[in-house]
Length: 198
Length: 290
Image (cartoon, rainbow over all chains, first blue to last red; front, side, top):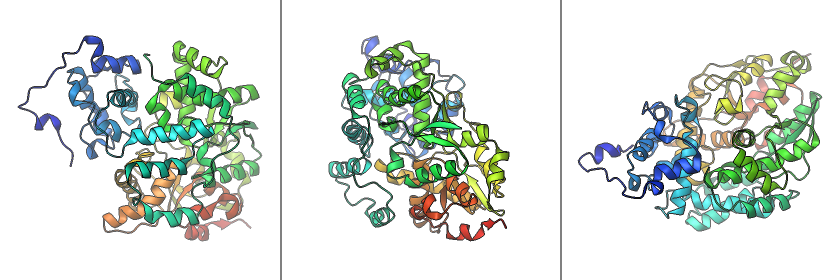
């Protein structure tokens, strides 16, 4: 199931971006995460331990290699950026202490900013909805976010077989959360609108 | 023993049973847990995917409340635990982050509030001997697969929880209760966590293979300490079984629910009715002391 993008495009020259140095993706990632991505040795411990790489279209070490080669156009549309579950196995095993999960977070920020292809599962929408409930109620209101997500992605029918069980067991709160210090949370959201250089 | 207890959003929703059992067990063991007034969301997965300063500030808002109480923070959700530790780490290691978070909160915070998991409190503060003394029942040789998942143990230089590759904290508690913490290879594999909302097929594969390995290793049940792990392993094992032509009915319990069973607490107090795969057979195995 897993594609090897290097094998598939072996006869295609890798297009190196001709963007100015500071606009290159590698530099954007370093700015956002504060991580020196260019110290990667390509030992692939990250990819070998990655639980989702084999179910997606790339792997952590491959993404770093593409960044190092400035093959920017290949990176932002990768499914792997959004399939990453931030489990941190990669970071835990990296001999160079590169926090790959933070690199993925930075790539997500740039992908959303540049309007890259909508990823399977539309995680950016889910993120907007969940942070929206945090801003409104001071805490996550998962049921509301899930309903709005289903409406936004036309996936009303997915997992419906689980609804009766979830409702009968009271596995999810029906009413919005109450009692949170919403004043502080709203202040935080107002002050911290977008990601910055680190 | 007195701590500030941060319940986290799932305590009011998908992990109500973890919340109930943690409070009941703490009370029985004489551990006082005080909730910070007006606690707010730790930022969870979405905040750090959108903006790291936002994630640090949302977590720090609660750390500041706990600082003002003059206590240590105890957390039972692995995800909240991880976000609190990450916020402290970023604030301590990056002066710019500290400044920005301080401005957003309206108060300077130095990242020094100590954050602990409830399991750490049992083993490191209460001690296994005192815990054993309080037991009124035994797991009676039950085979339990301790499943730690990701966020407690990784990245270990930041969370400092037990060991990154072969943690044994939960096994220690299980063995003390007369059960057998089995040796199995998927203790720290990833269940797919919050991808359950956006990529359910992927999570079914990841969570299902963990349940499959536990079953193959002879487990009677799985013990967890994270709301995402619990719901994924419990809810998705049936789908995985259907896909692979097998059947699983492995109960997935919070470690605090198992502890409560051995401390003589009632099913209602532990929220056992909320589990999808029924723990009925396990309960029959538990042997109550004379």
